[in-house]
Image (cartoon, rainbow, N blue to C red; front, side, top):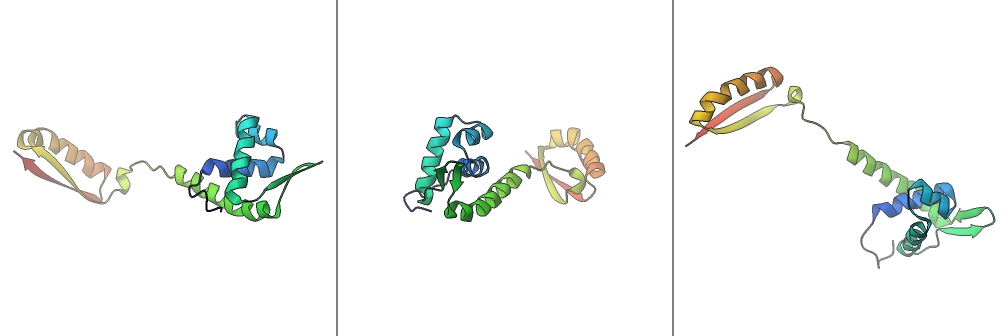
Length: 136
């Protein structure tokens, strides 16, 4: 990557992949829901970032350069990892919870509310332990 551009915009990699697949700026723009001028600007930024033309115009459309062919697999891997990272939003499963949960409450609240909460947690999270500490 060109040293002049120390930050990476992951959207540019999405656009690079679309350009690689489609072979035309307008079709790549449609694919990622950008305007054609915005995709042209993205291609300009990609060219600067990688210090390579990446795609050359021919009668068959835009053909990837050798550098583009070298980049496509790592770019696809990075995009896949990014997608997987975003899909890892896991919800809390009390049945899988283990460890000690500390519940803090005043004596009054603890006497009214905590017995019911602790009883429900013991059923829903059998591997979890509940502790409490009164606050005055």
